[in-house]
Length: 383
Image (cartoon, rainbow, N blue to C red; front, side, top):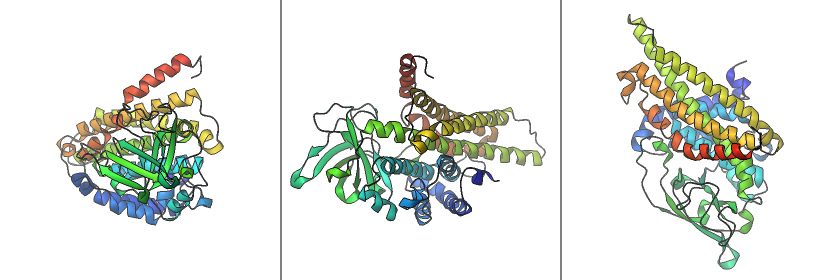
């Protein structure tokens, strides 16, 4: 059985993924150079319905499980990390609404029309803390509900069809008493606050935005955001992000292998310790990711309550995978030398390394390690 089949990809989905990855790879350098949306690959993802991979079949999606979703993230990332990260973030938003507000009419529209859903969870003034909001939901005119939020990093915000937005339950609610709401593009006003000219992940197009929204109250997810985050957003995002970073690392090592093979064919030496070290780190990354997938499946598939230990494991995965992606890609650079240092060429790891450098910054690793330390102190032996 092939790896793809073993992870739950049908032949049809595997073929669609191959086409999407090829298209992503063909445009990757242009996407990176111009810091533009990978529109070509996103079109294939829409046309093949890979855009709705996490949505159950009975609701119009592909109904794929976690191993298959991680496989998609990895393979897309080998071709274009920005495409993979956009897909991964979109799947996270979809999963939150599918699991916690499955009767949402807007969700039905989003799936049928193959909308791209962005997340507006970051906010100025919160210090990057996902679990706190400064803005609150308010009652507006004509029975509408409103909110206004300054999102510090809104990936593909200018190109999204809908937004999953977090806010306080009301203006006078505690900062941690949050809700999430799915709003359509026609329900919001967007004002871009900055530019996106970054070291890596340039194709995610993630500047800051001020968002003003007016919507119906029944668009608010009916469970507290802390529940959405613990049961769906954090598990799915950490696993799929790690899949993206693992894909970057796989591609970097593969380019290193091909570079050394070329040298050997030209009469050079194949004794490259950095290549063996990179592969060893890659194996460790894979093992930690597989273990986390196995640990999360009861929560996502059967609705089990996430434990303190699972939260620690997921934070540890995020930290380790993000750091490993950078380390492995740097090792590949040392293996390839100047052929890896150049921006173009079959052995270049420049874009891969720049994209990997974003990983430790996506929810700062220091914050997650501090959370884990506090959790371990309070866990009374649960690990």
